[in-house]
Image (cartoon, rainbow, N blue to C red; front, side):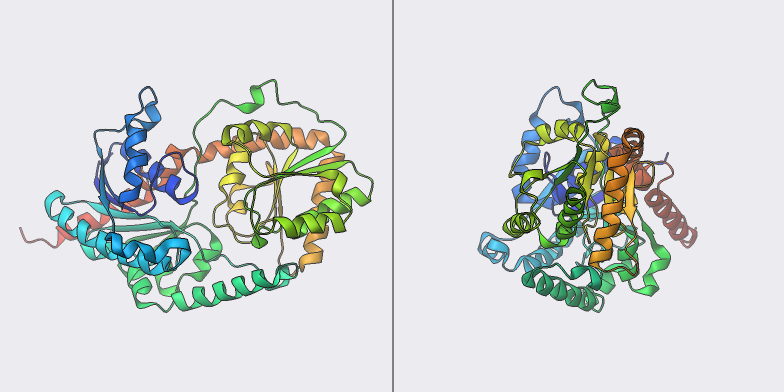
Length: 434
């Protein structure tokens, strides 16, 4: 395997975090673990968390390889107030990207990198200037091109409809942004999280684009070998939703599907773990549907406790309409929990018929999707053996997304990133006079 010197742009990069910060950290760590020399440009406020993690002893997965280096950069203090409370975040991020590029240019003059990789933020409508370095530029995986189908927005709150409408407008405008288009034009390889984001990508750049999710899990012992997992369940179908309580997560439809089971006399219990602005709306809906006796609301749970809790449920109900990835979906599968989701966004890239049920929404409205969700829940409730088999399938499927395997798809011996870097390097050398 040819080892490379890689510069990584990771605005968000912090240990022991989920979402973007965790993605930035793990891609840096795992790329270095493959043997490459990795330099990471990240925000200054990530330094404390990174240094604490690197100072830990006896935790090999967090130990800093000698071939992993961090460069910290941020805008001046006077500029940071722009993004407080969410105001001006987009402008701040663009200015940070430009400043990070200036840092990268100076660093490249000294280190002579083989490639540059933009990893976070992984959003399709945000520009990166790293392609200006004139070396192979790997972009992504990126998401954000996902869109909730209009017929499924029926149960959105008014603010939710406005938010998604504005998001659609901004996504369309971003395709015309000259900086965004330049980013894609300069990229040697574009990685997109979902087919929907691929559809969003301007047509002329799709020839160098591939789909893959950016998330992964730690390698762990098989939870199905633990006594807590039972091969058969109790009479009640125990369902779990965990995540943010926001309008686009689809639980307006999920709650109605669970209510259908309750009305049919099928014993069912739904546990809702999380917080968010839709909480009161969902609680009011549960009361309206006379579900008070079968829904439990848990505002917060320690991450380690949640990992253990997965083993006590029969299925993870996650009818989200535009999640780019689905960290909680992958995590629940790793815990031996089958998933019921829609064929939108990242979750259907994880879930298949061997580890859950993916509801096709093409041509359906919200009420029809509720019926499809209901049918899937009835199937689970009537066949405990099916649930037991799906548990095994969930663990097996999650093992395909162990972190080192995910990162190796790009930076491993046969990874697409390595192939692009090597091929482009050969092309350059072919035109250099002897």
